[in-house]
Amino acid sequence: MRRIQISAFISFLLLCIPIEGNISADNIPHNYGAKGALQDKNITLEEALHYAIQDEYLAQTRYDVVLEQFGRGIRPFSQLEYANKRNIQELYSMFRKHNIPIPRNNNDVVTFLTVPETIDEAFRAEMRYEINNISMYGKFVNRVDLPQDVKRLMSELRDASRTHLTQIKTEFNKY
Image (cartoon, rainbow, N blue to C red; front, side, top):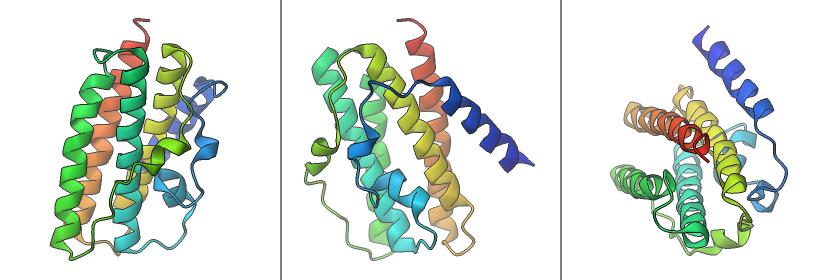
């Protein structure tokens, strides 16, 4: 029942957020980050961690782009940038614990993004990205074949993204 409620809520949010003129998700490869994870039917532990870290690298780059474009003090992007660094460190720990090589952030992800022209575009795009991020982590949490420690971390990251989405909406309403 809870899964149905969350799915309905996410669907409602997607309908409420216009998608024109945002940081373009179309430039993200089909097998990268949340976009890849949500399309992949059979995800291994290594793939789940790779998708998660890719999405966190992408988030870090988005925050950097927005803060560079509109100023370092733009809330909540400045706070999200800091939280994202913690997320990356948590994922690094999980890679090490499971003896999986950590993929480097070679900053190619910047080529996947289009710089938003307005702060409004940045907020709308970030809401969409957070919704996809929440869905990705939710998918990982529901996988029965992932180790419990990984599922616990994915649950924590999903919950953090839910909080981030709320923060983004709150700040967006101030603009």
